[in-house]
Picture 1 (cartoon, rainbow, N blue to C red):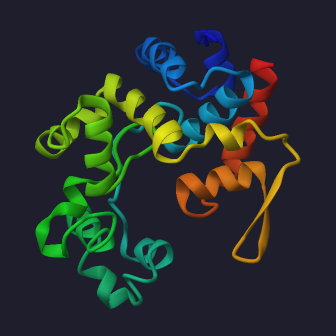
Picture 2: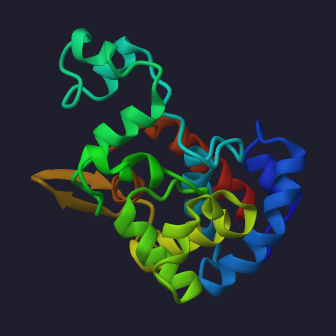
Length: 222
């Protein structure tokens, strides 16, 4: 299926028209390659993508937090204001701390957290996913290690999102389920779209916005 600029604007009404024109050709090129090619798959994908990239306004993660927000958003890493104040307003230090020793990254001192912070339309994050995506898209695991900002360019911002959806997380299988489908996870029952959100985000952050975009997308693409 092909998505039109009018459909994208209806799904993401806050998106800048020029940004839609920038990303639309790459979406229509990459989505069929990754089998995001039915209304159900496209609606779920575009809804999640729309939230992750702020309706095409963000392709690189913003980690410029005040101290109080660090305590609220990352309490595990910033349990007190005293700790948070040393990092507030220093996005590179924040990224290096919160992403250290996970997602394939090295320790805080390695700088991996900042180097491999979220980029692309579905905010690919961490050395491991950068390496896997690099191999999947270019055949070379070093491509995005050597030039991580490539993931913020329109071509790779789109391609990485499609790769993440279909190859890394196999989310077409979930998108194909009926809307009333549910699954059990950690002794809790989740709906289809909640489960998609958890698979992408690790939790349900921004769920109301994602759900609103999904409802729009289903109506527009039906």
